[in-house]
Length: 381
Ligand SMILES: Nc1ncnc2c1ncn2[C@@H]1O[C@H](COP(=O)(O)OP(=O)(O)OP(=O)(O)O)[C@@H](O)[C@H]1O
Ligand SMILES: O=C(CO)[C@H](O)[C@H](O)COP(=O)(O)O
Picture 1 (tube, rainbow, N blue to C red):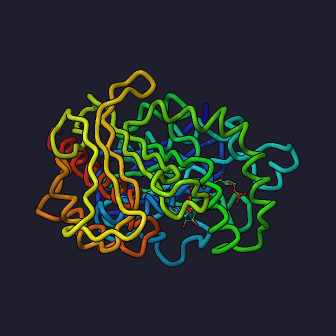
Picture 2 (cartoon, protein in one colour; picture 1 turned 30 degrees about the vertical axis):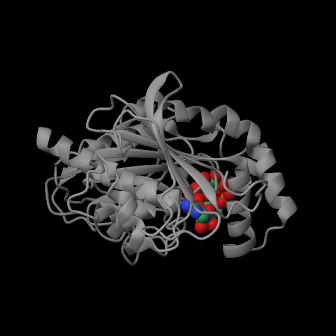
């Protein structure tokens, strides 16, 4: 386990309000000494796990914005290769920053980034714990552009820390630091469609064959190290091909399940119409315009890795986001602060991928539930 020294001094942090400065510095890595000023309030920690290219960044951008104000990379002058997002209430850190090998090193060893042997879990645990306890850290940076391990960046304690990546629930010590955890469970068909969209579209430079090959090459490690984490998640957002278009392989229309564990402290699962009932609902018609293939909701109880869960499901997509209010009025336990807040949040983020289907809807709802969980934890203190 890495050894650490703690420095205390007073200064102003580039990230957070004034407070007594405590800086955690790792002896096992040569980090520059920085002094900052942080509030000593504690931080609520949220874990978001998924495979590569499965929407972690997209979700956590939406989440940070729902929790309070647009999330931006760290202030000017910081490392442009930083993966960190900061809003006025939330800091999102990317666990790729704890890679112990850079891209060349992984290639030389013939290992993938999913292999936990090459993740610095000791440092991850010490730094997430430090932030949770109100201490700033100098977090390493993995640069996805260059594939190199960049100089560290200063992270000071926010109200809510979101740790997103491949392994937030893999190490039991880190898992025990989480106040709430989400797993994004993207089916193989949808994962391929999204990776094609990104690596041949947005990022470019990849062929269909190389994309399929990279997914296949990582599959053994995904099944061994990433996918088993979903048993620990408090909520799972499962994205599947639609059942409304027989034989569809485009995955432009998706069926999405929000799987919520029962009995999680500060988290009351959402339900549709009547709690505890089994519901199948096709809302299309005069109050919710739906073009082909329409929309279908479902709700009920199930078991998931031995846990009792509630599941709300949406298949299809919205034509007019403002009509979502009709659906919202039939959902309960949303933790909204006013009538129509889910619909308003969806309209605010209409340009974010998934805003017309169950992924955007359930990600928005999870954001409001996390806000409520945070407020309950703070009130209890
Ligand atoms: N709900 C969604 N609907 C449609 N496309 C989506 C959705 N969420 C993410 N995507 C797309 O999937 C691709 C991967 O998304 P994103 O970069 O957020 O994943 P990631 O898990 O952060 O990736 P990586 O692990 O490589 O960092 C992007 O092209 C993104 O636009
Ligand atoms: O799985 C990933 C992120 O979730 C990345 O592929 C991993 O971090 C390695 O990055 P790169 O492919 O840019 O070297």
